[in-house]
Length: 493
Ligand code: AMP
Ligand code: MG
Picture 1: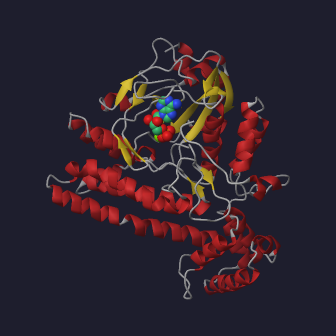
Picture 2: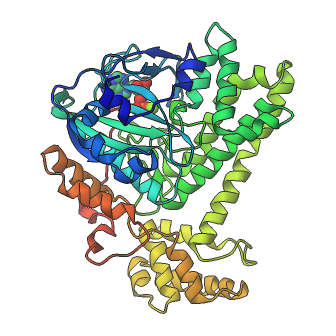
């Protein structure tokens, strides 16, 4: 490693040392003219990195994978995956590399990983590259998710490579530097299970337990407890997505993490009008990954994780299946509990269910029938408690429906002894004003692709403080005008 790169990063390499068989050593493709487009200074600080050093030429070179002749062993990770239900035994990092692990200021181990760093032996037909737009998209949406309090991978930097990538047209290329609790996924287990060396699977499970779910090590059956911990983390994660209207868009088994972080911001987007059938991805024709189907499909993905774990859970296959099935069957109830608590918080309620039926789901029905904007609606309801129902009134065409529902809601707040002002303040702390609205994201990426980073930087600033209404940002708070048509997103770009 060049001295500059060495002084920038103190990489550790537990993945490389402990999990041989699950990666191929590989190097980033050279970038002809690297230029920093975005650098996440707060994240750099969390990692104990110096933002100024990262922004200097040696830092920017390091952020596209140029770590000098005696740099660390960078690797493309292997994983398998069910993509839209069809199994691919060998996906892996086709255009990504693990640079190494960093210990952050809180003592947590984090991966530093590149996306768009050139073809690897896993690339299949792909070119190994990424375009500026989609990498900035991952940056801004993952930053929004973090600010919303949702577990997620982060984006440390986006660097333009100075090279065009060929998509439908030629687009400027970029590399994203991504930070994650790890890049272990359900698909990593599927990949390990197919290797001839059976020991790799056990080493992977032990590694994942130690890194992410250490309590499982003390359980009577550590591998079953580990599976249960992953199921629990995912049940909580999906509920959080649902409570902000996030549609991941491509919940293949290679995009479901063991840590419980959201990963792989491809065709994801936030829903405007509430509708469980919401799909943005142009290739998700059957709606497999529609908004309302996310809990179900993540449970399906977790079932794919149970399969490789069976031999570790119990030597007797029937017993292993019974034990894993029992854990998996607990997913819906865990998810529902998180979702219910989340919705109650969004309504300023404590967790007792009202006697006259589920208030929150009745509200969602009202939103659905009226095609009401999900984010604006919850925010406007706090206004109702403050004596200003104008914003809510403007959103709901069905004013009688809204009035009837509001009366029940107020009665429930009163029954719980909730002060209206307190409840409104509590709601504002969990219901965002600002999410990365689709038209704002598109506008920012189009400008950035054409060379103007201003709109992107403003959008990042807006979504970093999602709960605090700020003057002058009104136009970031609502959906696009109806006449813009249905929003579409694209995969693998
Ligand atoms: P994703 O849809 O990003 O989860 O990617 C699915 C798989 O396709 C992974 O194995 C990626 O590494 C691979 N992939 C996506 N885009 C490219 C590309 N441009 N070049 C090579 N591999 C790619
Ligand atoms: Mg992926």
